[in-house]
Length: 100
Image (spheres, rainbow, N blue to C red):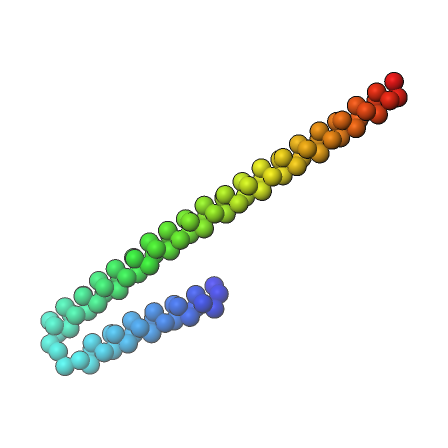
């Protein structure tokens, strides 16, 4: 796990802890506090889901670009290898014809 991931996990943990402490010491009834906790949890879950889906979309785009670049490089290598093979073939035929 890299530093950014550790920081993100720590920040989320601190945020959740702060919310929980704030709700526990708030001057609201238990029913109101539970309702508020439920709404906050739903909001946090929705936000996390949105970020997850956005990350998946971004990763998909990156994967497509990598695949495209890889295929382009493979095709370029095939073309160069074919060209080299043709050149070698021509030189071998030339040598064989000159020695015959």
